[in-house]
Amino acid sequence: MKMKFCLIALALLCFSAAVALDYQAPFKINANGSPIELGLGHANPLVTDWNGDGLKDLMIGQYSSAKIRYYINSGSNEAPVFTSFTYLQADGTDISLSSG
Ligand SMILES: [Ca+2]
Image 1 (cartoon, rainbow, N blue to C red):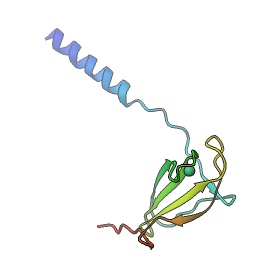
Image 2 (cartoon, rainbow, N blue to C red; image 1 turned 90 degrees about the vertical axis):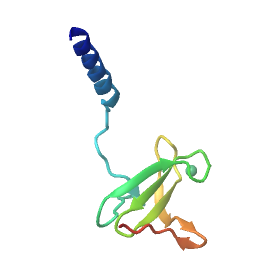
Image 3 (cartoon, rainbow, N blue to C red; image 1 turned 45 degrees about the vertical axis):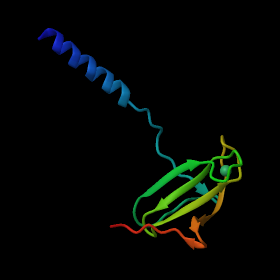
């Protein structure tokens, strides 16, 4: 019984250490000097070097329009600069993922 308790305690300790995440405080991201506004609903951001220039870009799935905004980083990875966005397209048409 004592051994079983120790194994459970060890498992809980490992699990809690594995899920203890250290998040930064939330902050707004600017484009053209103003915070990015997405309208109604939540956003699904992704930071990745989409165009392969070595700078991390910003992709945002937009709930209200069901489209994906693409902001090219014209700054650096340490101090990104975003201006206007385009919507991701496939075959010349904005990609739209409707809910439901
Ligand atoms: Ca890039």
